[in-house]
Length: 159
Image 1 (cartoon, helix red, strand yellow):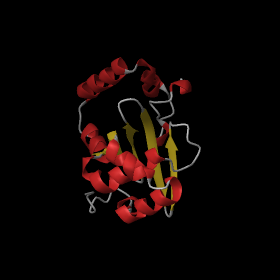
Image 2 (cartoon, rainbow, N blue to C red):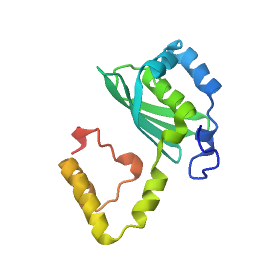
Image 3 (cartoon, one colour):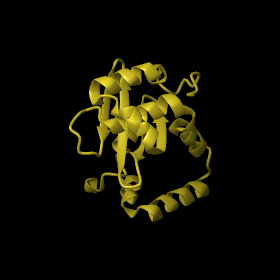
Image 4 (cartoon, helix red, strand yellow):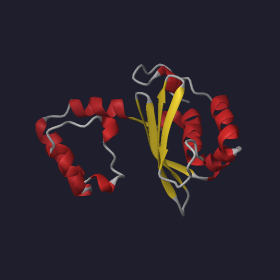
């Protein structure tokens, strides 16, 4: 289960429980979210403050999902074509969070590690990132420093 003591993760996110997700699942997608969670795979799952994200899919489909909790409200995005705010992919990621939260990459931990790197190592890391996706070079060259939630490596139209 999730580390309930990590102060860098919002209380609202840490307090989401299996019953909460089950209620949303029944209300929004008639229980299809749990089925999808159990039959699909969640990859690249991460948590940062009040947000979780990941890829949810099967061998034939893969959807990028983001969830942000604000008090009692949840804002979501998913790359599927479902027009509901809470599709089965969002619900599946929520089930993954409540069941497998310790497996999510905590971005705050990674940022702590990055802050400790010397300049030469940082240049190596940035080089690897740009070689992986050259379009991301603009992130390092822009004068305005984007907030973490403004960076969307899946959105190739923002170039």
